[in-house]
Length: 240
Image (tube, rainbow, N blue to C red; front, side, top):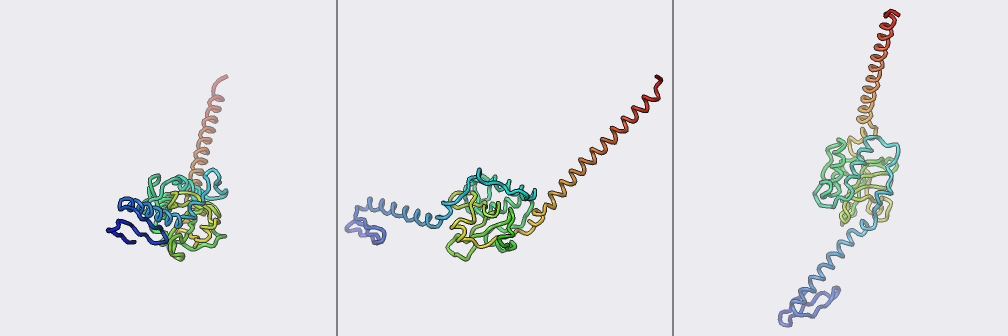
């Protein structure tokens, strides 16, 4: 780009346009071209993310999942609509993809996840598609380097996953769509999530609660039976 002060014109590269205007109008032209250039670049980078997304009303939680998985899904769904903000992880105010994952897993007591999608992929155990469970992670290379992981989401079933999109915030998308199929890298399981899948902690707590309730019922039934028997004995001892 050249600025000719004598003739007071702006000469832009041929592939953009040629503006022969007074300096003030030329500056306006430059501003407009800069905005168009930036918007075009953003649209190219986010092309796939703008086209995909499942309405919440159409998503159905799979049956047969553990109580821990259900808790994870419930927590993840409360993040829907949170705007995208790089390096943030505050529900309702702003988050990036890895930040949301850290917070959702922390909610169910699974800590230790790194605060970066590429590091999270290294931290997780790699999975085959057939072994993916609700709550496992899915990783993509959505940046300039097609080999470098730069995005992460949480699987809600075999296809749907929830994630923080740079253009729409936290949404539900599908791995099977062309964009995510092309940028897909791997599935991963967070260390410590096996206990959640098996329902060890949750089921043991439930069993303890159930046992407590049943024991209380038995004790109360024993007390009531003792009271009844005592009343019968007293009734028999009374003179008719």
